[in-house]
Length: 333
Ligand code: NAD
Ligand code: UDP
Image 1 (cartoon, rainbow, N blue to C red):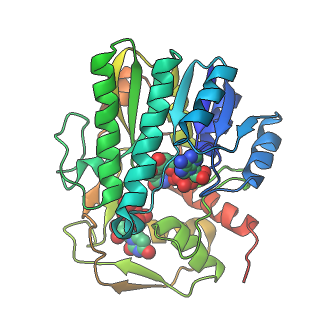
Image 2 (cartoon, protein in one colour):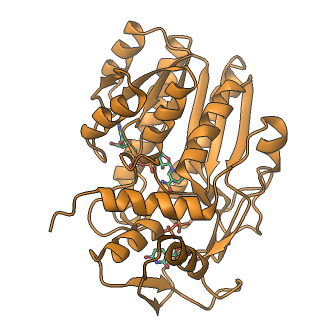
């Protein structure tokens, strides 16, 4: 298939581009580089031994998106482009609502206009709010604690309404759990700007000595050891999950969790990272982080039974590849 990947130079998008090309699909990337770098394109070309078509455009720019759709016969889109920093979204809600919603609407309008009916959307486990684990696709969504989460809930609704109005659309909403790790080459991975908000990049930067110690946000949750539990999934598994979802896409709206189904606590992740990589990660327990929930992990039965996809890589693989990527990146002090 000929697939437009928006946000294809970002963390998850770039790994998905590799999987798409390796399985024989053609890819066109649209990214405005607001949270990525053109160097990623060179790395993608080198890993896949190809010359990927890239447009540096903003997906909210309907004129440019329409030109792209006119120039290329697309079979489908995978829409990753968006902002994702939870904390920033509470400080700058309009920035998040504008970019995340307008990009989805602009892209969906172009799909309608140019008769491109396959649409895969990056959603998030955050839409479940503080439901009881494991999270199932059939659960009612609960309010999220931040504007970022609300943009995902609204993005899902916009696409659901589109399908109600035009049943020929084939829309898959993928609710990601916690992607970590990196491409095994060490060329692609997660490179946050400034101090990381997420656990794994924080761990790798502490291990490297860029940051002094990890702050563990709370040890009084009702979990195995009191620290927060999440469903960490290797980003390459997540990437392969997109290819499986795309290749099995069908009419209507279909929602799938992309996780492993296993919950891991913060302390368990630290211990696994230390053992796998034979390196210490100094940490200190601090107050809970506002807005965090105790446990978040997936019920993965639906995607396994309907599509036959499941995550294959272990927590050790995630820790090994994340550390390999961190060691491969140049530290600018
Ligand atoms: P990322 O920031 O690494 O990648 C997003 C990419 O989109 C970046 O390259 C950025 O430059 C681009 N972009 C942003 N706005 C754009 C616009 N208007 N036009 C064109 N390009 C634009 O993020 P990621 O971790 O790869 O996440 C990809 C998607 O998955 C996002 O929609 C995110 O909300 C969602 N998601 C991520 C996670 C996670 O933990 N990383 C979890 C759940 C859902
Ligand atoms: N966490 C932590 N210290 C950090 C970053 C995160 O203890 O510096 C914890 C956080 O409280 C949560 C888990 O690690 O229990 C995963 O957090 P992350 O921000 O990576 O993902 P999310 O909260 O979005 O699931």
